Image (cartoon, rainbow, N blue to C red; front, side):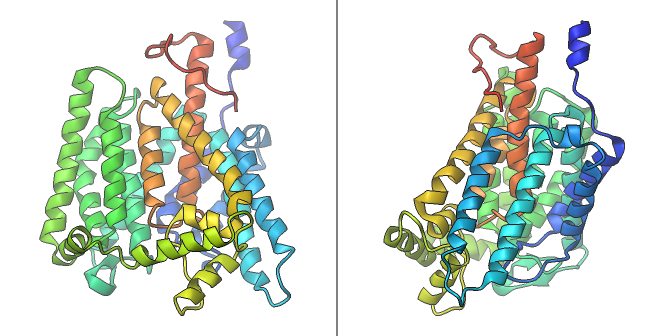
Length: 412
């Protein structure tokens, strides 16, 4: 017993915990800042800097040994930096510096988040902060603080509607997972789900973000497939069906959204992605080993469509066109390790929530590039931290579902 107490981890200080919650609360209001334009002094960045400042009060907790994927992601960033040294003299170095500095900051936040989220109470607090901000985001849409863009899509705070939709999708999935997807059950969170899920779902539909709805659907399916008895699966499945029904009804009732779905299903319309993705793949095949380089990749893609610059609208094509196989291999290995951690976590206390969030995030990045957003790195950090709970259970002899069959977690 004394040995276990001696090994007990040091809890984060209150100032660190609450600064982190404020930082997480700010995530839904950030824009997709890729270092190309604007957003340098956004509220979300300021809260992130303030949070990192508080971590210096407890470096032994916040800056413990980083997880294994950290080094693969760092290798990708170093490849980007190395390729910049071969850039021509007229290269846009300002855009490169902004892009790389954003990536470095995201990686540091990923490292800190991984260490903090190994405290179970911080997992619940962080997700509740994110859910609360998503509720606020939906409320802004309902109360008229909105802007309507092409095809009748609605957004708020001048954000891209896909950004708002993906955030609401992850928030709704996290709310469902906290209520029914983990071992740590809390009736108050279940009550919160019934109060809030309708508002978040309708707000999600109003954005017209089809990929966000598909990502949410995939996450719900994985939540239903959680390990446990049949009664638990039926319960989660019933709630999931209600959410899906609400999405379908709201999509059908919204004429603009209904038309978008009809064009997608009947005509294969993907808002131009059906042309962008093949061209981005062609760019990769033209330079498969080293890519076109950071910044140059989206400038070249834009030139092929008669524009100044253009996003690939796909994370995986972004990495491939930017750094080729040289930078893609370490980056994708890091993603794979995060996926494996989420898969292993099904045997622990977090159950199916990590794999549901991870699958949803990967699907969202099939039609968007979220590499430079905090929610991307937050989900990755959570999936890795969730596997550490299984390690603790096995080490302390706590009950683990099918422990003789459970995979031994990799020491990060």
